[in-house]
Length: 392
Image 1 (cartoon, rainbow, N blue to C red):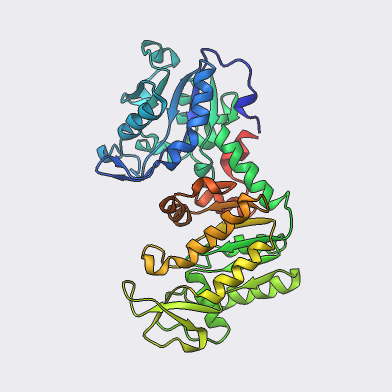
Image 2: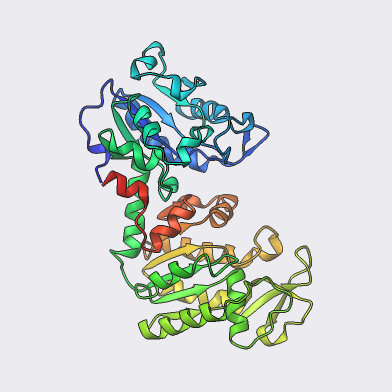
């Protein structure tokens, strides 16, 4: 994989730059700019090199149809504000743009083609569509790691037709994930949450041989609590998962990886109720587990203190309600404390975890924070990502 930062002659070249600008919108207002902020270094580098940038990106799932509410217009305005440069959104149908000379009429250094998913050929990974797009540029750059698990035309097929490179953010993402999967400094700890074990089973299985500790929190911890004979009341849990939990426990013993799940919990009778700390043996039929308790927080803190590498994916509880956010907040604070003294290398991923850290205003206190969801998890599973494979 070649990084665009090592390419010498970019002056006046037309760069087809695939980005993930799929930011949350509310009535044309961007509510979280994290994904935009992360790709600014690549844009600034290309501007400095006097390249003409033609951005390919998407918002939402328009399913091959033009949907006005999913236009990239709000992104255009945001990029103008952040880069202090004029940015032009091109509304013309991509299929009607015959070649790259079309862009010579514009003075702007940055042009954005309208939502690439307005074309059904994008998600169909259409060969001819990718070939047509390739005629619009001189060089292709993928800086959309979070889309790189998709075999879509602008991710997988397009690199076949042009000199292709990785962007700065994609480089950082791959380097960070390599450090926690291939170039590990032990002891290593993974804190993993979420509501469904089935979506993370392959990640956990792939990490068990490489990690010293796997800490299970969030909704999936309820399956472990119940597996070991405790009542979880009316807490959320994934059904028919005893076999999966058994496989995880068995593999962890074989690989000498400790599986840690909550010792005590914070419960309530509903999502908006008052928090109450309970031992696992005390949970009643009409109560639900919504966070980890103080004993569990203390145990996790000690494990973090004794670790050199930390991977965190998934909050510890129902953090949307401040009554049940303490476990997640304390995990974040403990990792930050160790980060500040360079005791650990920390990587965080997953939409909910990133949202928590954004609300705490501490995103910059970790070695790396990934906004990639599916791509992040599939890389941790050990899968080959189509977007990375295409660049290789």
